[in-house]
Amino acid sequence: YGNPLAEVIITTLARDPEVAAVETARWNDVIRLAAQNIKKGQQRGQLPAAYQPEILSAMICGGLRHAVGQALASSPRPSKPQLTRQLWSFIINGLQLNAIDPSGKNKVSIRKT
Image (cartoon, rainbow, N blue to C red; front, side, top):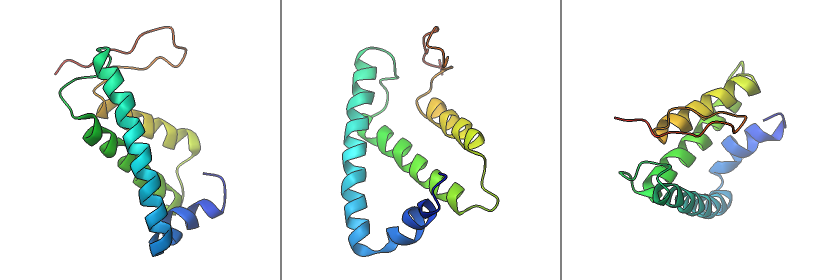
């Protein structure tokens, strides 16, 4: 986020066809791995089982990627702590979790809908 090339890489450079092809392949890997993590969380009862892991991981990963891109292109940019809080809020809500205790002392619970 602090690297001056970050905005160029995630916005302008991503439009190049060769770069876009590499980025697509990498994001497919990220989404596949995230889906595996989500599926494990569902099997353990830590995440709601109502959603397909692949779709949920694509929504979260894609949302994060584009949110960071938007933040990098913004003027003024949100601070790192502000953006981090917003991203985590998005993830928590996307996974329908009640809360995350950064200290790790309390368990995360699934929101009852």
